[in-house]
Amino acid sequence: MGKEIISVRQFTIIVMLYSVGAAILIVPASLTQVVKQDAWVAAVLGVLVGLLLAKFYITVGNISPKLSLVQLIEKVLGKYVGKIIVILFLIFTYLSGTGLLYFLGDFMRTEVMPETPIVAFGGLFMIVIMFGTYLGIETFARSSEILFPIFFLLFIFLVVFISPQVDIKHLEPVLNSNPKPLINGILIFISEFAFPLVVLLMIFPVAINVPKSGTKGFYIGAIAGGVF
Image 1 (tube, one colour):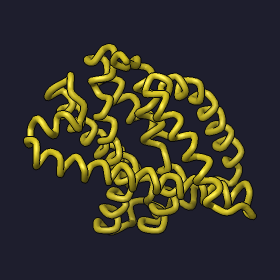
Image 2: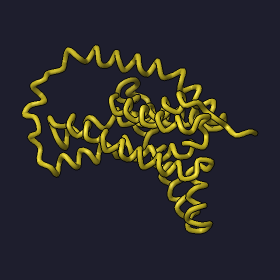
Image 3: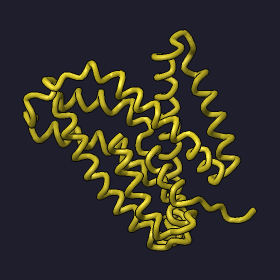
Image 4: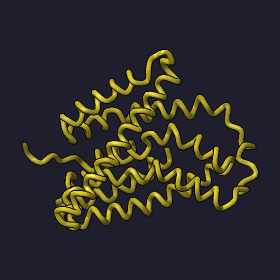
């Protein structure tokens, strides 16, 4: 099998959807619990910090553009230490994936089919994930292109139909939070929005047809995900 390659546009969409991910389900409530009416401030600052992390990821990826993150780790840290770090990285991705399955299942059970066990949703989504992994990154990227307009349309519907419930007074008093809760809010935001983006170094820039343009795609996808 030849090396799998995706386009810059496909990579941009993947970055955006990946940064939104479960964050759109759990971050709003978590932020408002910590910083109350200043949750939007923590989110804006979190996007800016997330872009700095994206810059760091891009720098790491460009150290050796022909290697994935796992290959780069072993090259830089050596065979034995590198393998230990790789194993920890794989454990991180595994825990992230299982957490995402839980959030999806919990959302479906809460909003769509409350009498269905959460494990049923998790099992169905897991089958889709396994099949997508088997087909490879190119198929995954094309699927992302197809699903992106649907995601965008549903998001617009959400904003439009929830807008009558918006009350600007809920944002007052502005910047009334102490620094510590605000910093905690920023950390909550980037923990779901920016930290997981490190996984994309498995395909950036090694699997992108125009690696130099992939940097721009990384930034655009992160900014778009932050806006959503």
